[in-house]
Length: 435
Image (tube, rainbow, N blue to C red; front, side):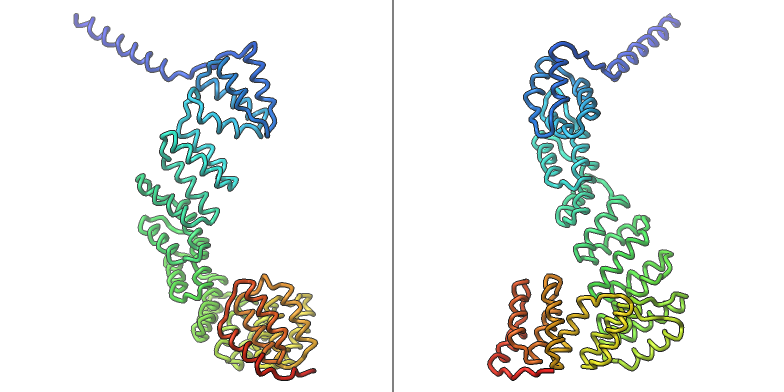
């Protein structure tokens, strides 16, 4: 008896093991022959615009397929008719014998997401819900990346919250996607909060992520935010580079703090970096805010002694500044230098020239610059329109000012102050000077 029980027990375990193996052993597809084979060949030969539903239904009626049979047909279709494959794959989600699972849905959603076909992906998610299958972490992860890539902030945020509710903790890729969608939506503070969350979880943001945040804060003139990111970068082991220092120079310049801009400019040089054209332009623009022309010229002379040659960015700032001061001869010297470099004056310079020449009464040159500006009206911002219209009014070009003001309103911009000034200029129009 002592020997029999172990033997019987062993046989029982062996039988159970064989039973389990048979239940998970891959099922073989049924052979396809006769009329069923003919229908299958017709399916494989369909064009992309054809509706495969009737033939699929006929094939199902003849073959009585299980999931493995459908998968075999799909594999053949993928090899021989890649354009029709996605359509059939989606149709099978509603086929009972296909026994669609969540991976079938997520696979199709992922394919649509990679091609930025958001509506198609959302349609599959809706079908998924209709069939009683709730999106899991993998599917929701795909949606976060898709919406982030498309810049759809609200939908990306909803998908992220869904992930959290599923108990999924975002990984580096999810964080990066969400940070960039916040940055691109002009919300760097929300993006920054995600980097703090990453740091708390010992997930180190990359240099690229920090730089994206720094650029965003700089574009918004947020010196506090830019300063925080610059400090965090250094604590994280990323050394300041030319661009990060330049962004700080530009940020302080925007808010009219040339002293802090200069501190960062000098710090850049102490680190061994040579200021390039963009960085120098940012510093000159900072001085322009406070009209510190003497300091700007002194800096340029010092830099030129070290081999620096002003480029288009620096010259554009100087043209704008000297134009406001009505230093026409000096501006035209700069224009000659720009032309000598083979550069076409950017739109910003044309706006400055239109304003300067109009105020100075140089009709021909003012109208020439105005023509260039009007041809690129879609690229103008509110400040550009105000500058042009203001200059035209000041120079007595009231008719032209009224026309440009109309273009401005057509572009969706409004300026009550400019409207009042234009009305007053029409009531008390003075004779246009001619030079």
